[in-house]
Amino acid sequence: MESRNNRKDLVGTVTTRSGDKSIKVTYFYKMPHPLYRKEVRRRTVVHAHDEKNECNIGDKVEIMETRPLSKLKRWRVVRVVETAPTLD
Image 1 (cartoon, rainbow, N blue to C red):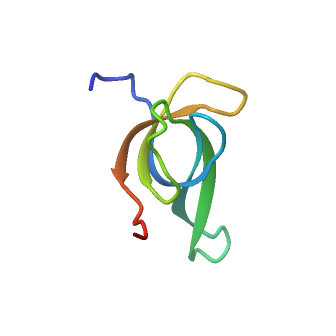
Image 2: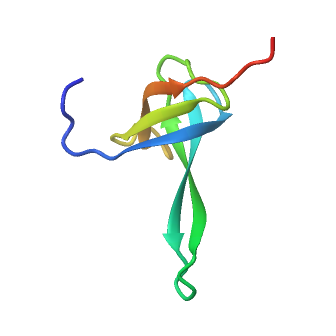
């Protein structure tokens, strides 16, 4: 894949499939508490564009920052890192 100008990329988990070619991705990070300095777990939910409709809930995906695609979508799916286990 070609270089894309220092765009941010994240790895997160698909939490919702909302509409055609749209998903919500949650990623967790840790930061120190401002007063007590204990590591606190935080999360961010972003809307991402899934061009091929290949992601399912629970999949681990890599997303990349992109131009605004709609009111909330500013990320797009690069690849599915790991698929969610399914019950057979």
